[in-house]
Amino acid sequence: MQSLVRHPARAVPQYSLLLWQGACRFSTSKRLREGLITPKVNYEAKYAEKLQKRAAQQGLSVEQLRQKLKEEEAALRREKTASAAQARDASTSSSARTQKNSAAPASTPTARIPTRTDSSPVKPLSGILNLEKLSETPHTAEQISLLWRAYHASRSKGTGRGYLCATVPVDAYEKMVSVASKYPSFVLPVPREGVEAADEKTPETKKAYEFHFMEWGFHGPPLELKSVTTDLFAKPRPSNNPQTSTILFTPLQEYKHRASFATPYLVLTNYTDFARSHGIVLLRGEITSTTSGSIDAGGDGRYMLSQQDAQLLAMGVQKFYLWSEGKGEREELLKTFHDDPSSFEWEKLLKHADISA
Image (cartoon, rainbow, N blue to C red; front, side):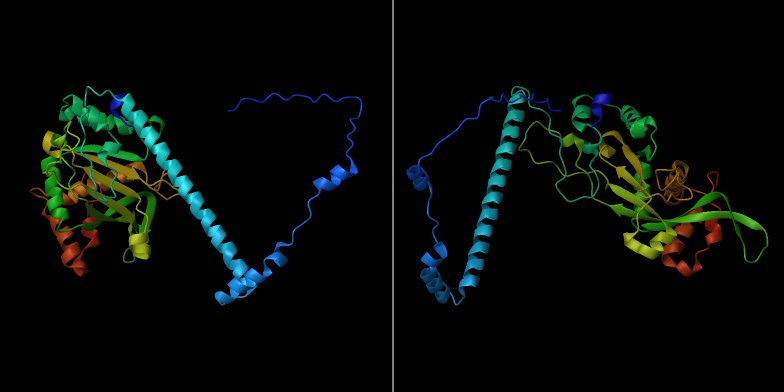
């Protein structure tokens, strides 16, 4: 299982110097010393006339011409240095490719996993799981799901902190995507334990909630694993997989202040690479880590969101985007949030904040 997952100088001895007790004397004749002394040439006086002539031709002073020549010489040195660096890098990469090709057995061509060539911001699934290994031997949906959970459980030094994962049936995912394409944003409440809020109309206190703004994003379908081939020049076939999607969760107050520049506290990514071949979609959740000393009220130290709150938000997506019989109020809340925001009732939304709701 582990193989399927991608995951000084020696002191120079010092030698003492052996000094002779006697002083070594060197004598040099006066004629020899005079022959070794080279008279200093005044180049400035020697070429003054030529410099003045050239400066006059270019409409410059002699000092300006000197400065120009210095700049041209510096630019030429920089160009030569850059060319040498490029040649060195090209030689290194060529050598590395040659070594890699010579190390690979020529008799058994390996299966080529198709990769996307667009500018999708989503980390490809091949960067998490070794899809080449998975394609070599058949794996069931249950085996892939087990591998997916085991991989994320091993993160953060075996604690799994900061990550969520799940396997979603493809039909349920397609239902949620069809709703999300019409209503791509919503707000979800998260209860704040130990915090109470007083109502202006009633003196008694009530449970406090923090609202998170959620946004769906769609990034095109991944190529199908069926198009794996040993032909390096074969073009990948068009994909029938659903679109890969992401869901960003940001505290509503922060989103109001910073809009698209606000930092999401949780990012859910739905990988659809196995949608057609195995009927499953792999869900991955990443909680944003803290970069300062301040910690969110619901955080658990190194992350902006607690593991429990992240799970509540992920479950909230299923509550409001996977419609079923007898849950008409959630459907109406989602529609009202988009079509008639002034009529949106926060009180009705809070009824669905609990897990049992």
